[in-house]
Length: 157
Image 1 (tube, helix red, strand yellow):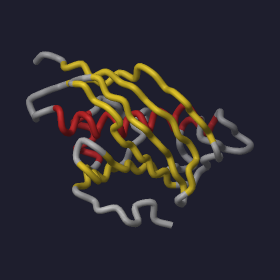
Image 2 (cartoon, one colour; image 1 turned 30 degrees about the vertical axis):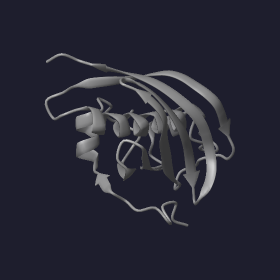
Image 3 (tube, helix red, strand yellow; image 1 turned 180 degrees about the vertical axis):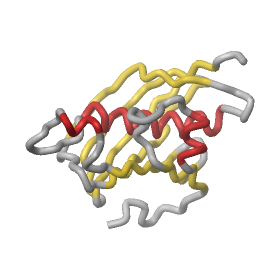
């Protein structure tokens, strides 16, 4: 099932653009692609979960399950890309710091072979303070949801 049914994609940010916006790198970069639905307002990130992810070696070797904290991290990275895409010019540099995770719910396990669709929607933004409603879906079913708050700190060049 396509998690983007009924959504009009405004723009797709590939991995190289994502890496220009956020500093995360393997193994901590948890977004493969970001579809902008409404610039600065809504987006859907994609994370392909594979059996060779380093965290599966210890979580859990006998039954691989993606840690919930990493699903939240993937959602936070998608939210950071959504925010920085509208706030920064190519000359700017910034970091996004997660300040709170509220109402987190984990409804279903995420396992190798799943594709996470990371839905992020801005609820409020005041300059460099953002609050976002987020959901991770697999095959159209919500597996994780939360409300995230973050602060964006521009770095001087």
